[in-house]
Image (tube, rainbow, N blue to C red):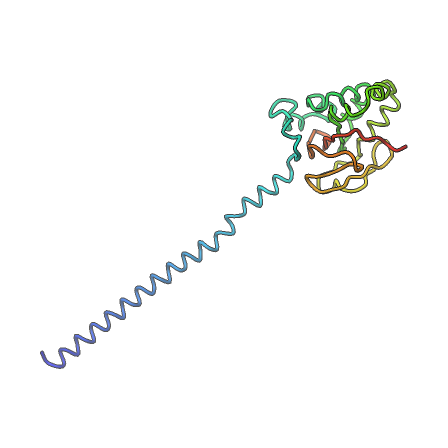
Length: 214
């Protein structure tokens, strides 16, 4: 084989090797771009979690929420359709409160009020009050009205606005301390289930009856 022929074959081989290297480099670059795209997409994959967290912040919270019926008029969905006194009457945790509200003649007052907050003592909360004292309270309409209206503020308080001092319908202030889900009212009544929505009120179910100081 002559020298020119060998040189041509060597040149052809070198050119072929260079073309192969360029092809492999292009493929590698394309693959890297695809990987980068996947990495860039990963933050958006986390967005639903943020949305879910925001949605959860608008839901009822607290250990006692598990005792609320899952469906029907006394459920969270059912209560949201009714004004607050009617909604409470369908909740088995609040039957003593409903009796007191009826005794004081406040059903229409609470149902017709707009955008209020109700701190609703459970049946167990009323059971903490000595029976003789509770019977006397239920028999004294003026005093009962004073106590019950002390559990109501004339503004609808979201959990983010709950901590602080708030004027009540009774006229005196009550104070809420803490952060979600651990709130305490007047330092002695804990919120057991909060941010419960009714048609005209936000309800915080509490474990102790609140007593005005005056």
